[in-house]
Amino acid sequence: MGIEAPQALNTAAQARATWRDYVTLTKPRVISLLLLTTLGAMLIAGDHIPPLSTIVLTLIGGYLAAGGAGALNCYFDRDIDGVMSRTSRRPLPAHRIEPGQALIFGLVLSGLSFVILWLGANLLAAALAMLGIVYYVGLYTNWLKRTSTQNIVIGGGAGAIPPLVGWAAATGTLSPAAFLLFAIIFYWTPPHFWALALVRRQDYARAGVPMLPVVYGEHLTRVQIVLYSVLMLILTLLLSITGFMGAIYTAAALALGGLFLYYALRLLRSPSIPTTWRLYKYSLLYLALLFVAMVVDRAILR
Image 1 (tube, rainbow, N blue to C red):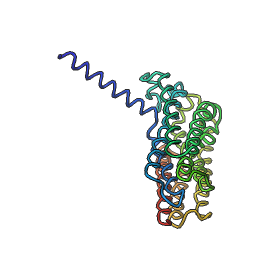
Image 2: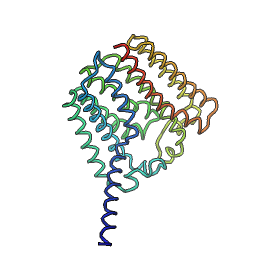
Image 3: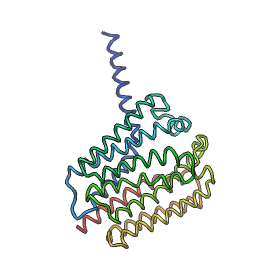
Image 4: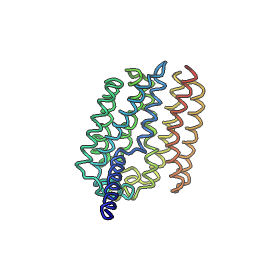
């Protein structure tokens, strides 16, 4: 009894670790922001808030879609992840999960997401989520990431699809405003990710990933961050110019976007690791607050 009890405890601990490892494959920190943009789009898309059941099932399906894509990304990128210090402790390079298990896990989650979104929302939402998975895994992970400095520019479209999923789930269609949400996130992604790439430049160089700062240097990357920040700010204001958003959103977009541009310019003029981290962390807060402002504005308009 005295020997078996510790063995049982050790087995249970291993089971818990395995469960955590599978959750890690889904990249939950990334998914939280994707789900926020999905929910925000659902709440502003129509004249009425969708039924709670539709919202809940869409978010579950969205998590499964993003989680499945994340697991498949971990499967295909396991060689790169093993070289980079930032990702070397992930379950696959650390050999806590076998590659085949991660592949099956990602495929199962992706399939479940399609079914749940189709039944819980509609076929358009399910098809868009599947497009996002194919875009992220096929176009970005297996091609652009390893071959082009435009990897995060073009590949960033995958992360811009969740608002389209939310919009489609709420209305059954897509409107010009929905594509503006897509464009905002599309142009937000490069300055957000390039900030991280500047900090992790040596990691990407070691892994042979042609990120912009690795191939063209840090100064050009900082210039591009400023340019994309300007374009992003302009796109956020188009929601107001077209009359879809009101004064509350406009004020928030100007304030949030102005601060984003300030951080980008500061990084260009006074480059440093702390300044780069500050922009990266603010970019996460920026996108979340921007979508919250959309919801508040539309709630008052309603």
